[in-house]
Image (cartoon, rainbow, N blue to C red; front, side, top):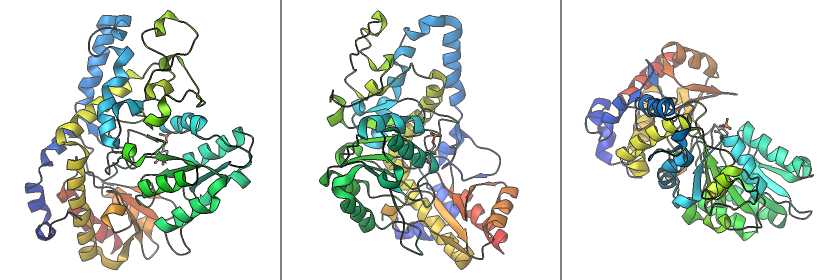
Length: 419
Ligand SMILES: *Cc1c(COP(=O)(O)O)cnc(C)c1O
């Protein structure tokens, strides 16, 4: 825990005054109210308009030549984000590519990394997985001719508990051992905000001969990641949550270097995965790009990548994940403290309290069961947060654009709503 004891005693205005990232709030268009829902849709970088306008202007003046002209040539536009994405997830630049949407990419990656055999066919996910991830795993199992009743293993928290114990996750991997083909888990759980022990999960899965993929939808831009060093096989994330790339933003993918040159790996292919030097010769021999780009199928959605670039440039300017997480830990400590002081037992946070087991999201339960009413009141008072069935209000202080004053105002409004 890096929070200094003196910071614990400062009030919101004092913390804002000494916050080195405070000025970045002005780089975003934030809807009128208290915006605490960056876990669902990150706020809009004001510069996104300019990045998109540049591409519209290039289209307007260059037409088809925009594909090949200048530093922003569309044929290579996806590569403009690779280095920044690699920094955020702890990867080599060659291990990442921005393409498609998250669930699409989970499928494409499972085509490569879920290779069931009659003896090794199981996929381990959480019982509380995000539905899209559940559907993706289930349908991949069916697609390969297996039965989810035998092959889809779901892990559940202990009775009366909300989050998973590290030891229970590792024990489940061990139990299914030789039958386990793939472990597909989140980096940060979308409902509880729990950070999964990704390094330990990866080595446990590899020990039993299984592959490991992580859904980083709630992890990227929220917590520090070291996918390469952890030796994760693959990962995917979306860019509209903590990466602020806007609705439907382009997903990102990580494929471990070890697998990139493996020609035996099954893969769905398209022309954007072949050698760009010969791509336009229109030959039909697939000559895989020697990076994660070989998983690309189609030419890239330039306007969506433009908004992602706008956001990634701001994140880089702010000092990257280390700087964001430093502030985030202060915000987490501040909100913990003020919730305890002001709201007390009337609201329970089911997110783990240990700082290395949580990102910026809080998953709040109203203890008298009136959570839905409280949420409606928060919305009415223009607190942007969200409700997730059955009983959780999710709020996420985002270090790039939320102030400590936002958090204080939220606590006061929440207190009135639960009173
Ligand atoms: C947000 C989220 C998704 C969304 O999937 P899309 O394909 O981008 O619509 C999927 N899985 C998880 C865990 C998420 O948090």
